[in-house]
Amino acid sequence: MKKKLVEQAEREEVQEEERDEEKRKGSENDIQELMPFKKIENGLIWREDGSIQAVIGVDSLHYHLLSENEKRTIDGALASLLSSLSFPVQPLSITRPVDLGDYVDALKNVLDEAPESMKEYGQDHILFLEEKTRQEVLIKYDYFVFGVEHMEDEQKMKAELDRRAGLIISGLRRAGMYARVLDTPEVSAVFYDIFHGNRAIRQRIHDAFREDYFSLYVSRKEIPRQEGLNAPPPPSESTHNELMDTQQTGNRHEERKRLVMLG
Image (cartoon, rainbow, N blue to C red):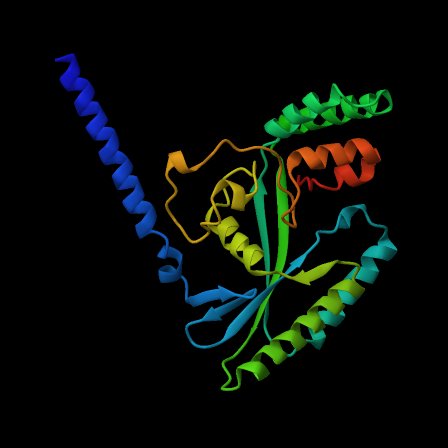
């Protein structure tokens, strides 16, 4: 009897894995079916009607920490930008929760080997993060989405899109904001953030989900243990290198700039 139960359990487990695999494979194109675009290529979103779109990522400003003169300068630059545009632009803000648990644990481990001059700073930073973990920590991404209607001449269409990108970026930089056009993985990550906005950020998307941005279904077994902290724009270094870099520089300001706390 025991042997039969074990065999039955094993069969059910195999069947469940097969169902998970079928769901995963069947969902790879789910987003393309739901969204009105054909593909994302070279950072461009190609829509079904032949038009193309691009996404500009913008660094967030600590607006409420600025002086009144700085605020007026930024407001004026943004107003000038918006009034100068002759094409539609869609601002987009995405806010996601952040889980700092793994980051704090990793920082504690690294702190044991840190120079004495860094330990006091490290302890202070850990206390700061632990206090924040008692609250809801959010991280914010800001974007501008714009496009060009279909043209028979594809090169002309791309040139017009490039011109519009230049206008937006130069206007944002006059307002003191760093902006750039996103590439294909970053545009794909924007879609991931939209569809999974309630999932806490603990690891880079391409590591945790194998760049399967367009899958609505992810089985539990496909999600590895998540480590570290993600911050916009998507970083290319590991959490360990990030922590070691913090040790070497000892730059409190740059370290704290990685988090955007929203009240």
